[in-house]
Image (cartoon, rainbow, N blue to C red; front, side):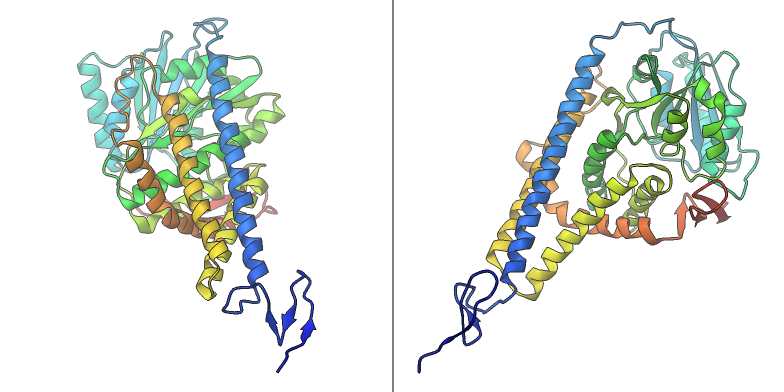
Length: 449
């Protein structure tokens, strides 16, 4: 019996008795969608490659720009004050304080610690570390003071309350305020680099970022490092500050707009950009301020909420959130659609495109790693460890953890978009909407002592 064509589909293939000619033998009528997904994956990879290349060129250009700066800022080295807010004793706290004590800053500087309470585990660790460093003569600061947080307002975060308290007790001579996190081990020239960068014309605030290089290399640590690699690119290109290594001119603090935002905001860094613009200053990323983080203690179950909180701070406070959402949401939906399509049927083309996408992402992470390590590798600074694993082993480490990283990123993005409660260091906050007085922010619902 001879079969006659029944219809001609829009992609130009004839159908005989309802079977498309030229498609896979299993008769997968959705083959064009597999082709669409395959092309979308490759297009997404190309866009990410362009962004990574732009990031690498920007870091290189910023390094060349720095080489043209005078050794000493115009007007001399400003009196500086480093503020460290603590709640809970991070494993790296003693090391972070030792790194601060060894700062080679030519000007006068002070250290101010605001601890959640005297009963907080960080209080005893910080107190003992400061006493030991000063007794040994290693501390380069002029003075160091440590005090408890005096009030816990319901509106805003405890971090914001701690910073507002620290700003109210700045030394009168302080002209530059630097913020640092307890899990950041900085180089001896960190404070001097902050001062030089923030002294450039038109710059009101500068920050670096973090680079995770976990020593043990657990699954959770590798996933966080992989996510952070992509975040480093976006934060650099979109001008998103990082509060773990941040410097601000005293004039910005005294103007009051940033401090007012801290009354209700979740964090200090992403809420800084708009007050800076209102004052006519700009924010600048500096690659020499990238801080090394070797923490390997986070549990895998905590990663999605943790990453979600990082994304939430951008959603609440930074004007570039729509672009972050486009990148995060778009890539997550694309990968989930491709994975679902492969589970429902089979398409060699889509499987090949997905494999190529994962291999490409691995290559991009290696490129980001090389860029970050070049920024960390300062002459004469032997305190910064270098990766001992060969290239092939590092490539395999990135590749085998990529699917878990991408899945957790998708979950974290969901948390950032839809969660109305967020937990941060034992404190539960309710996320306030844009129509709330003072704009989006948080209020504390309760905390653990």
